Image (tube, one colour):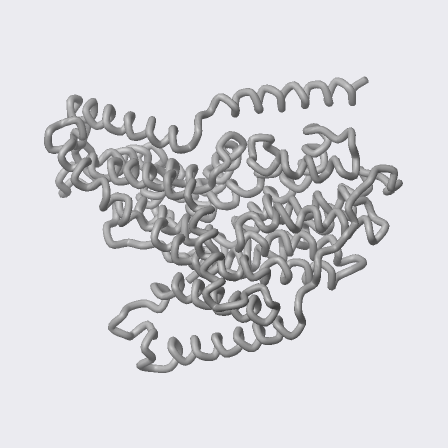
Length: 495
């Protein structure tokens, strides 16, 4: 009876959560509403003479009215520049040009397949979680390829296919931010962080590698935790695989070994050239070069590497008859970003309006004053923000949309309390990742449920949530403790 009562309460709670989340509008509409609130708030702030002085000697920060003649002129004249100059836009477009070629050639898919298929026994679950984390480099590949592949792989090994699906889902979604390679998420979030910190520290920027060290070491940590949970908690909970329901145990092709060797050669060559261009004294892309930091070249460098690697693989495998066929991958990657570009247009306007009206600086200064009690406890501040991000993630799925809303508030607010924007961004990324797998509002939740139904026809939302909840809770606890220890030791999060 207690178990039935607890299950009933859980299902009711999840039902309320789903109904509440369904009432939220599309992220684009949310940004439109935010723009309206910013305009109205700027008028009220100027009317109420809201001002804050950061120090006694400073000129007070005062609100500027967006609904005035000056404000309306500024908003209309700068609408295009706000969008084209928005940091996440250009960088993502360039990155996806290269990754689009690699995806269209089949290289990314084959690398994931070979990684998972090469590992068996005790390390199988950890390898599946690791492959899921690495698949985030190519956005949806993990969801549409790796998750069903993991189910088929476990079934072929005589293990419960749902355990494989759970392990892959945990890696792809709960471990979303972690990776050993910089990817689109790093570009998007660091761009928004740069725009946010400019509200109180003009000229300060956040590198796309700002969290790289921490995320690179988080990758094996989460893989091992996820593998242990799969073997010791989730699979025993599922029981022995009886094979009563039909499943697709077919495995996709493993790819051309010759083509992969050529890609490996290209990787070594590219790495050697990169070292020569960056490391020696007086190198063209060295830190002392007139062009500035070599980090500024990371985005086109990643795109170039991925494009040539995809071109080599596609040509040798026969996927690309001509070099010009690679442009199809670029075009498809651009088409897949249509929704993102629409979202970024309105996000760019909201962030720019927030900055011009001075509301960003005012909210940050006021909030920093309120949080002065935690000034000497930055780790506590960051962990509290991490929890807030995790809770918000249950309702709003888009990471860029959430960070576009939260970044301009929390980045400058915590910066004024001595918390670096790179640290605030990392806290957000952890919270934004770990609860992806326990909210039915996540766009791919229904897709994963359909994959699971191939092996257990009666599985529902509650069944999938029961499988995934251990990953979410333990990932959040383990990742947060790791983050807190990292901060306490004073190690840099990235470069």
